[in-house]
Image (cartoon, rainbow, N blue to C red; front, side, top):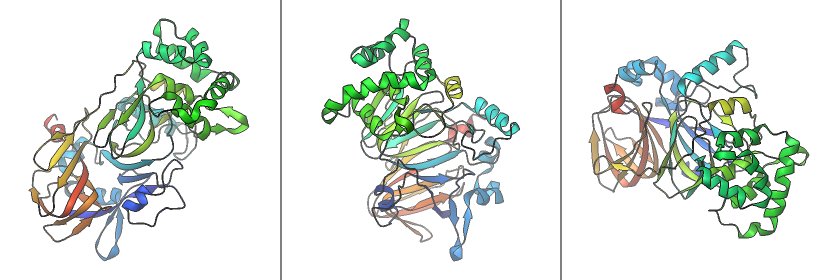
Length: 404
């Protein structure tokens, strides 16, 4: 069956007030920010299935009520009876935290350890929110800027050498040792962080109006404005802006964040798909808790060459964004008005987000821009496009079951 799904709205402070409310058909602008729509079954913020007679049921409960019918025998067996992915729409108006995600083995061990210590799940100093890894892929819906992985050593050398106020850091970058340099800035006492960053702020201020977004100085200046810490202190995450690759994605382009890759979203709207987890270890540009030892423990310090992923056609109406994981597959369906398509091959449940247009199912249900669907596994469906449609969707890859 095909069900109407109500996403869970996250009102994080960095979100916008127009894009997501407009998509949902709400008045704009909104007084509070709309940062993320969560489409999935994460226990902390599950979406809800909209049933008959206005009944609503959390997706977590809907799935557990009939694992075979609502999750699929194959997926239930492979992922311990859980929907393995979490699907999101994001509107990034202010910079997000510098962060990294764990692999599965260390996520499981860390979650168990904090449970044994009795740390409440909602505690501010809780590091592991669940026992799962969090690889993720995102597709840009607008021009999108992000930081992704450490630069090449020679590039980091050039970034530091070309800014007088950052040159003292070169003494901690002998032989291009990225780990030594990053550990140094992350473990510095706050007073020494301020001593280094105050001159940088003073250096940037007179030229701030002329910075291009392609320059790390543009984002460093934004960070100085956005992340003023109590007592006049500076956020050490600003160092990372010069150490990480600055990437610009055009609409329709994607990038994958593997475990251990340090990254941060800076500006834009996107579709994001990840393993069903909320494990985030932060390294600055945030008022939230920063556990430096945990962050350093989970980091991959190898330099990264960003790989921009282009959609791969699967047929005349569907493209897929490949990701090297078993948990999820992200795809896009594009249909012109009056086009009719059908499929009966899906062993996996699917979640669709209609970003443009209108479609009608074979049973007569109509879904429009802003609607979200949950499609039960092994559902043979047929849809007719009533107005040119763009739909992003999430599923478990067929290859996952084939490998097990």
